[in-house]
Image (cartoon, rainbow, N blue to C red; front, side):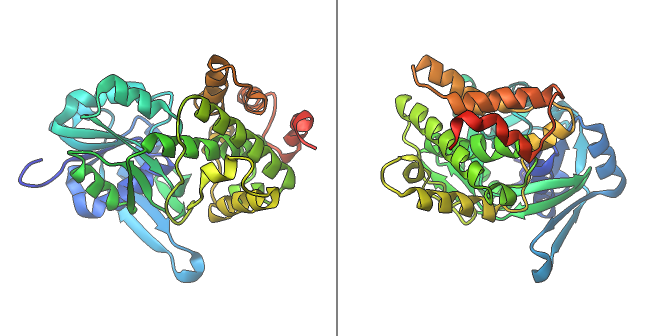
Amino acid sequence: MVNGTLTVGVVGCGSLGGVIAGKLFKKHGNNLWIISRNRSINEAILDTGLVVEEGKVEEGKTIIAAKPLVVESPADIGKPLDVVIVTTKLDTITDAVKTILPCLSDKGKVVLIQNGLEGLKLKEKFGAERILIASVLWGASMTEPGRYRVTAEGPFAAESGKGSDAVIDVLGEIFPVKLTRNIKGVLWSKLAVSASLTSLGAITGLSFGRLVENRLILELSLKIGNEVYAVARKSGVRLKALPGVPFGINIPLLLAGKFLPQRTKYALIRLIGKKHAETESSMLASVRRGRKTEIDYLNGEIVKLGESLNTETPVNRRVVEIVKILEEGRLRPDPGNLSLFHSFVR
């Protein structure tokens, strides 16, 4: 920080990174840097700038236009970074953190916002004084390189901690921040959502809003979530309700089994999907682009942990198998793929 001015970096400029960079540009201007190796996105931003749309058409959309600085490596910036928000996929965040840490200022922090549990592992590996974990409870899409749309409003859930005020302030410039002392419980609750809707969105090709219109998907989502809950409890994790407008759902209560009737559970899952009705699975985007998905870090992580804890996770295992087939190009996303779960549903 120089003269009270923060130097901020955003690593990756996909759907989340683009929205984050666009919303931060107004305050930080030339002290904001996008760190990206995606040539098509970089060229689009350098040529015509970055555009973010938010709000509903009937209420009047807000258009954010920005032209942030773009580099391929944090070392190219030439000055220490105070806050770096990493938005890249789970299979690249370890390398991203290793690259960023030498470029931080003395009190600089890396913010990890990915789904899954990798952030917890990296925090343990590299130290809590350098890494802050947050969970994204809003949605976005990239309509074309350099063009982004907010598909669902909501907060960040971020861990509270000493020395994190500046980082929380930066996150608060994007969307509101809800602080928690149980970020692990938040990540596990979000994992229950991601392992069901995100993965089933990739398998079927349906948006979240259309997913929850299907009774079979509601049943599968609950079975997937129940397995996540069982593994979490065996791991000694206390799941936490997800805060804020888009979710605001007590995931532990939803998955605990005996406290709510089935129709109420289905109604809560529909509420989650409807709040994100326009959002498409990030995993679906990867499949469509012929790229490797994050399945190993979501449902695959549940399967792996289940094996180590002697806990059965057959539905999550089947999800992994089907997504792997999609990655190989032997299947295409389609609602008809739900027939591949016939042994798990009525």
